[in-house]
Amino acid sequence: MADAGMLRFHVPEPEVRPGGTPDFSNVPIPKAGSAPRPEIDVDPRTIRDMAFSIIRVLNRDGEAVGPWAGLLSDEELLEGLRHMMTLRSFDARMQMAQRQGKTSFYMQHLGEEAVSCAFRKALAAGDMNFPTYRQAGLLIADGYSMVTMMNQIYSNEADPLKGRQLPIMYSSKEHGFFSISGNLATQYIQAVGWAMASAISNDSKIAAAWIGDGSTAESDFHSALVFASTYKAPVILNVVNNQWAISTFQGIARGGSGTFAARGLGFGIPALRVDGNDYLAVHAVAKWAAERARANLGPTLIEYVTYRAGAHSSSDDPSAYRPKAESDAWPLGDPVIRLKNHLIQKGVWSNERHAQAEAEILETVIAAQKEAESHGTLHAGGKPSTRDMFEGLYAEMPPHLRRQRQQAGV
Image 1 (cartoon, rainbow, N blue to C red):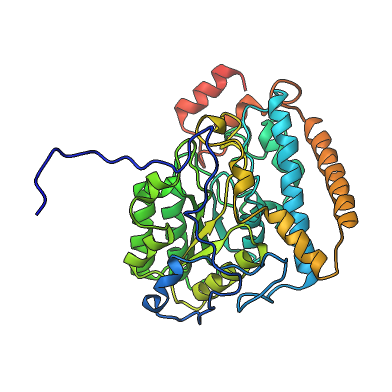
Image 2 (cartoon, rainbow, N blue to C red; image 1 turned 180 degrees about the vertical axis):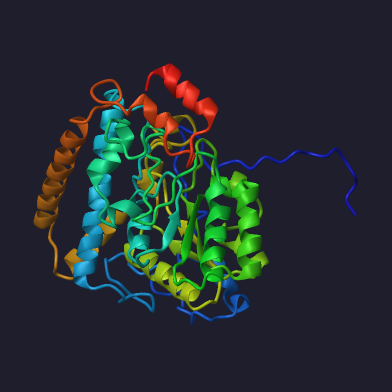
């Protein structure tokens, strides 16, 4: 028995600090195609190991291999590539607009495009996503108007949310995109409740909850897992592990569980980890989880292993807490490049066509930006009316608000 001594407080530390050499040796990368594809009614206890591995479809040569491959046609893959390229181009233009003072705030998806773009194609019309602020690909891949997205970012006169939301906090019932909350993790328990309501009303629609690795430390995350497992809610519980919260590495929120997917095991929820930079793998796993939910088999927890290549937001400087070259060393690569190489390997794409598509997409994004800016930006042009702050809150406006509106002259 060891001698009792002074207690020591433990604080997890990242492997490398700024100025150091990036090191991802602690991220084991299984061989593509090696993960089994269980039946959707599998006993979660029999696939426990899948919460600690990574499901991959695309190998280093750009080939799609294994039991999770073969679900998408060439046309669907080309569409997926275009969605990711569009989101990346959209991001670059809006980040530039923020630097030019046209909007107050922006958050990029750089390196994470496959997660939301591929996931959306696994859902059906009417399904509802409860997203965080880094799933705009759900809208892009569903054909939502980029002009409308930009109007919201600029908070101009055509902003569908009337300037009431922080830029990039979109909302569209028609496209299954629940209003984003600035408070962390609130959407997770809301998604489970929405899914329970769908089941109670004998509907056919399912829900998808979204959360980042850092926010899994919030109590709403754990409450959501309790309700989802107890009532077998038709919900997909997504955890986007992009390695970094705003300034802390994933180990702070992960604790001693080893992986975020492993959190589901204690609740009896099937838990999978997937290569978040592999468009084919993301779609295949999302499709599997959606089939489970629609078959009344309950929730699935999915951890997407990816990397936030950009800053947390336009207000963040990642060089203060991680090596500058770390994103280049990420072993799972770039989702756009990997799908591009796969399509070239299949003979349905080329470097020349890719360059042409980049130019075409950029032209489309710039045209959308010009149209949005014709309605105004943060410091120029049209703004939402002051009267909008009084509208849409009550079926019948209470007297005190009616007096305030009269005093404001709107």
